[in-house]
Image (tube, rainbow, N blue to C red):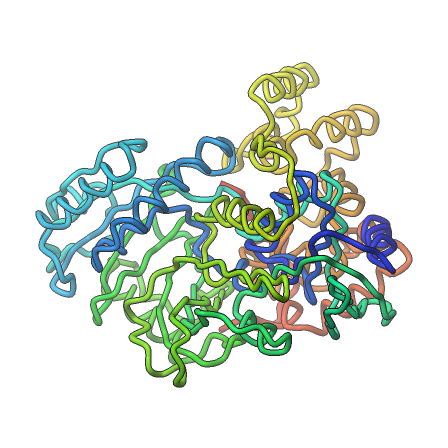
Length: 562
């Protein structure tokens, strides 16, 4: 954890232009934007980066097709623009994806009308994806035989995009950009108190790993606490025009339900008329999401949530046998912070079912606090740019935005990497037909850092060996994670830097030789304590419908990025 220790040293008794509280997508992209434009920045999170709402998304990068229902055309246009920017900036990480919507009696729209909407959506997105299609029930059955087309009137196929890896890893990409631009960044650091005096903020921080008390001064605070933004503002005496209400969305991860030769999302309207999806994740499928009103920012998956989703998907797919909780490998539960006017009253006075995932940014000039309300992964670049504008408006000059704080390396750099990978026959290290080439995976995950991995494998072939069964993580990746990805607890790697915990049953994440080597590489002398901490937590326990079984390497081969 040397990288984290170095950053803790920089926070201790430091002075920065901007302190950002919250390391989800909003905080991470803000840190990258500001540091990339010359500001001195500190980013802290009381847990790991992207460890709450930002790790519970559908892994989709989309323009908000469903927001057309409420005629939110400006928002849809803005989100489509954001999607197009991300697809251009991250060609290896954000890929176009087909959505096949089967419309039955629960659908509020006939197929022809939905096709008109899909065509309008394509136009709003400036025709940057393949055109939509109108399908008959027979064509839907031919395209995806798993769909039960009894009662299906027809459907549409349109295009959006998705993250090839997981959402939390995408968030960490911005954290890495911030670090490389000079930001002081640390996870598991709690904001204990904050006082403003003499034109700056005096922040009391607690390192939750060591227990040490830290002091940090900042000219400006960015409140990027997601579901907790209102609570922090209240503690700081900041009054805003907006506030947050909560919507809970869950996903269930099960064995792959759709054809594996094509990456395609299936879309359905549930019995209440709301959209839900079957989303590919390697040879797993992700079912969701739901949309449930909640007052608890830490809400979890309930038995009723699980039963509802399983019932809805069993009604719409022609499966050999109905899905049960025994088929659920992992679950995701995200509490979305939705933006509403701060007009008084309690949080039940809002028609939250019509709320979109827009964002609002407010500035308290007197207290020099910038608050970010709402937002989503698709809109992240806009958030980073708008917060930078707000910082400049508060009197802190920034360098010109050249766009270098986001995106993948140049195509020329990519070509050099692939040429070197071919010369050393990197892809020959993997011969299984069900996994993508190593060169593709390493470049997408690590960009320029993948060059050092080639050299490490060239010098020591054991660095190119799989570790922890067949999870498709090389030994060299673990060493890189240990030195550059601020993995502080085992869960950080298993759940967020990778998605192993999401696609491998908990029963197979037990105390194995491979997992012990993972801990040894990541944590050194602390390996035993970190392993025990992990096994004592929820990720070391049986998942829904699972019982503790002997670890099986056969299951772990299911981990794929694409």
